[in-house]
Image (cartoon, rainbow, N blue to C red; front, side, top):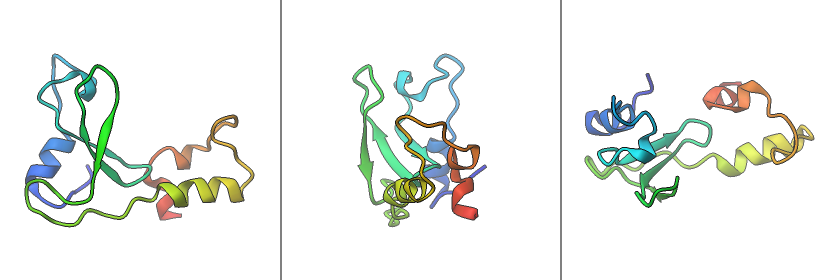
Amino acid sequence: MTEHCCEAMTSQVNRHCDLHPDPFGCPDALVVFSQRFQEYGLIIHDGGTATSGILFCPWCGARLPESQRDRWFDELEARGIDPSQDDIPAKYLDAGWLRS
């Protein structure tokens, strides 16, 4: 389990609902975390998968980690991988690429 800035954020990101396996369908889910990009977002409950990115924790006020989205795309491009057309190597599907 990934640790986050505070207990409230960890609880929200790891929230599990027996009625709604998808957090975007659960009205009680507030925050999603992308391991791949190290990004946090507030869920916009409009029937889709929209989020609004956040830079600070709504509960403790801590500054959240800088997004690694640009770096992720840069690394794939450097390896000649087009994520819109090519298979993405498994290590790039979560935070594994950040550790290598």
